[in-house]
Length: 225
Image 1: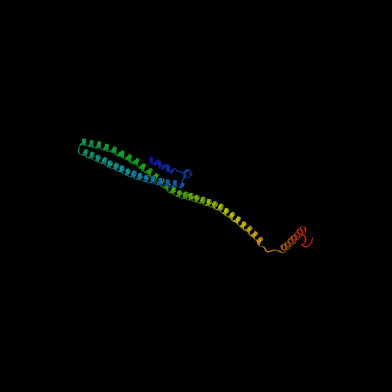
Image 2: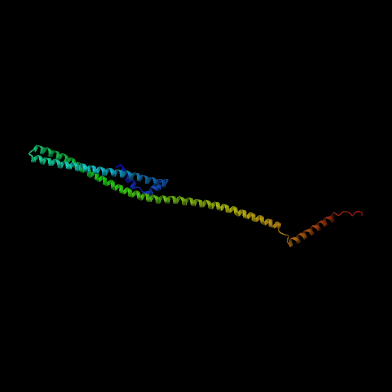
């Protein structure tokens, strides 16, 4: 009965509920299949034992029924020979053996019912095991795919952040180089016509200012008083 209760528990198992509650669904599914395989082997063993016991009980019943028939034959022989006492003893013996034969017949019938129940349980468990294996393969594939997709998503997010940072640094460097190039271009650019006139005007202005300073601070000409 304990075996049948364990089998019944496995047959009623809801994979989705078990997976939702499990920390490691893939490990749980593998363990569930292993448990069902072990239970299946035990049920097969019990079925074989039950069938063997049934055959043994049926053989005992048949043997006792044959013995009953033999004692009745002896009783008839004793009556035919005029030995009523022997006939009575043979009939009493036939009744005793007949009771044993009926007992073995009842046990054989009960054993047959038990064997049939175990056979049905074995078929159900075997079917459930095949279904569970297929479902486990599907669920484990989904679980692995979910983990792979999660890792890929995380990788894309990480790459995206890294890429954005790299692009930001690249843009900053490009702008800095552009500014440096512009400054260098301004320094190294050839002098334009406007620049030349502006330089000439500034030179003339400097000369005028210098003349004014000399006029204000003019020293006496040597030889004059």
